[in-house]
Length: 287
Image (tube, rainbow, N blue to C red; front, side):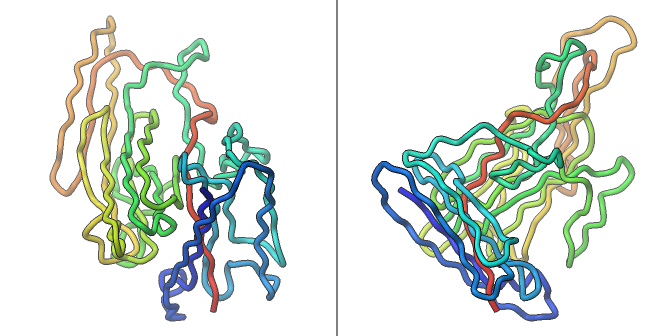
C-alpha cells in the first residue's frame, strides 16, 4: 500500500503572512511492479519558499519507509521505485551530512580506537506512535552548550547544531529509533505542523524519550504551538586510573532536564553513521 501526503499553507513558516494550514492524504493500493511518481507545480517554483513552506512525501505503509520526499524544485521532479519497496542503503552524495532519500541528518557513529563500533554508553531512544496525520510530524536532536539552553523562546525553538532528525512520517505507525551519542547536553525538539500534537481526527499518538532504555519523558499530546522541547544530558566520566565496571543512573532534574551518568574509560572518534533515520510522510504548500 502506498501513501501520498500533502500539506499546504503553514502559519508558522512566516507568521506575518497569516497562512492557513491544511493537509491531504491519499492512499493508493498498487500491485507489484515498477512505478514513477512525479510532483508538478504549475508556477515553476515548487512548494517552497516564497508563498509559504510545504512538502510532499511518498511512503510504503507496510514498513513505514519513505520512498521519496521533497519541497524545493521548479516545474517538476520524479522518483522511480519498485513495489514491494526495499529501502536502499543510506547515501550522502555531497557529503553535507544529509541523507539523500530521507533528507534527514545522519547521526554520528561512536567508534573505538581501532575504528570498530564501540559499546553504546550514551543511547538516545525515541518511541513514536503517529496519529492519522503522520505527515505533520518531524523532530530534531540539537546540541546544547554546557552553559546555556540555546536560544529557545516562545516564538522560536532552540537553534543548536542538529545531530539527528526524523520525519515526516506515515500515519498510524509505530517507530522505535535509537542512536549512540557523544557525551553532552542536547535538546530534543518535536514539531507538529497542525500545532495540536499527535491528536488526529480518529487516532491519538505519542512519543517517548529514553536514555539507555529508561523512559524519561512522554509527550506530544498537549501541544499548543508548532513545537515542544525536552532537554537531555548524557555524561560519561573518565577514570584517571583503571577502568571500572560502568555504574549507570538516570537522574531526572527539574525543568524537564534529564541526565545520564556513568563511570568508565572513554574512547571515541567520529564518522557518518550508516544508521537509518526513519522518515515517512508527505506535504504540499500553496497560497
